[in-house]
Length: 215
Image (cartoon, rainbow, N blue to C red; front, side, top):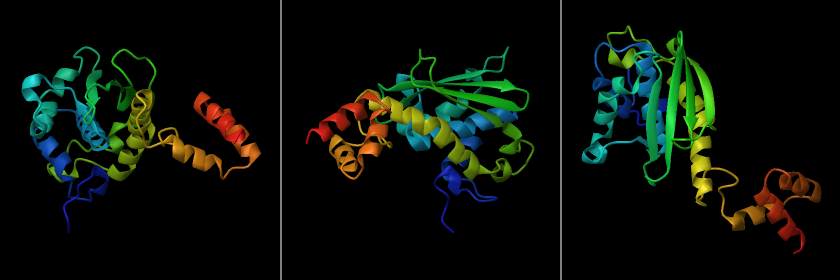
């Protein structure tokens, strides 16, 4: 059986290679929320986000060791809140921040499209549904990985990725992120009522719909 590459490909008693490497770098006395944040960091890396690293640590091969080493430093000792800055691996100037606030065994995850923005995406996670911090076997410390991977990517990671790329006019995994030629091609298959509804969704589709109408 091939080694799992993505987190969601993990199976019982066999974690994805990157997640296992990350967990092996963690301190031994961490709590369940720390494990979940480690999982979040690995999942965001699959989408293309990397934790900000100092210049001397920028080698790609070291991001995992750096991230796991500083996991405890990102957490407030008073409130237990985690604050981590990320950037897009392919475009380091596109930056965002991740804030996770504990409420008992629930962790409130917030992903924001810039270091100063207050507008982003959020989700609440029952940590012990996905983490078993008491297992002696490293492969058994996570549960329901496919479910959590899809939740995090669909609710947080992909929307922020789309936002960042759209802001700088680059293609993204969304309808808005398609090239103009493809958007116009899509419009050509719609009836007038559907085009009218699409035009009300945003300024770009309003302008495209008007241009399409005069052709």
